[in-house]
Image (cartoon, rainbow, N blue to C red):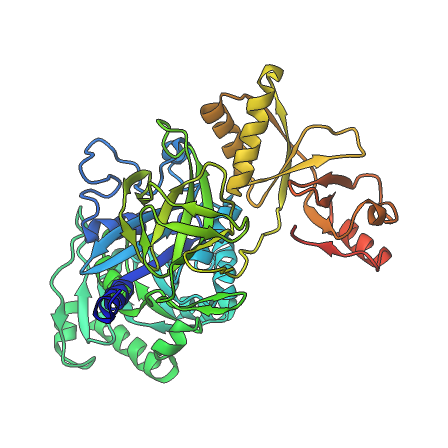
Length: 535
């Protein structure tokens, strides 16, 4: 390649990376995550009606919810990828489940994004699942924008919400706009930076009135527009923020130390368009990524990692898709790459990009993009592939299962299908399959982060593999992987015979306990044994 062609290629790469934003939306159930997702797609023009993919007038399910269970229950169960364009930017939205019984898949998806949107319910504040997901973001210092939703309903006083964010999540909260009233008295928000009143119209479509320009917070026009009482309250709030509030600092935002706070109502389309613009302006494009041999810059030769595997997204093909996050270089269809784990060279044919379940073949992609690869069994979660030499990105962490159940094949004639289905579902990482030994139990045990995954497994084994199963909840609450082999196991002092021993898919020994007391007993009475929380 000539120097001019090489320079042009590098310039194209940098231009493409600069316009990309790869992000996830995190929230507790019912905070409005799926609604906000649909409205972002609506404003970008990716869909014509919230809940339907463009051109499919009869489809009213959420675009990101493609599984039958998701559509029937109206909840997100599995993570998916949505790519769309807005104002010259290419957005890669990795949608994560908001249901409280989420899976390890949710956590892993956050390893593949460059920023996140945290959605809070103004009447509930920080809820348990939000905190769990926030903690995963904190592991990587992911920049987080916060959208406080449902201002058209009664909620907490805004200053209380800011204080809760700072106290519970230990992150500075910098308001970018400020609500004027709430519930039936909600009139809109005051843009603190541009000194605009953005007025809310309580209409069927939640349309927004034209912004009202004011010269300052003391502009007499405020009282004319809002009324004396609301204008006085707004002035008092803004005065208090100027003394005690956090000022937004973009550099601190990029390191995960401060979150810009926006107020609005996703259901009524209020504040969504300005929030989408803020996402483009504030969220970082893809940057260098850590590896075992140092940071890999975006203009290094092509590299990426597998963060998710999903089987049977398309019932017509019954294929398995590996989700690849591109970290560096230019990806091209049919390119040959090095597979770090096996040492083999693979050719990447038929790459696709996603819009929920919808997919289309692509010719090229750039850092930040998520590409789907047909996976005949070559890839597992955490695999690294690269075009030039060995690259190994930082390992995707495992998360401790909290729920356990036995799974029994109802029809013994479908022995092969039963074990094939379990193997493929475990490969996706939604559940772990443990095989007990040394006890009366012989059925495989499912270990999951969220209890809903047992129903997901049962439903998918029936619909996708034709296997009927019986699920039995087990009383165990803690799992510990034991470092060492059978010789270590034989010398362990156990608290009682209720502790169940099993082997995972990698033949590692894992012990299941029914209480924290049992775990601590083993740790204290076996000082030379390592009890790990993950395999």
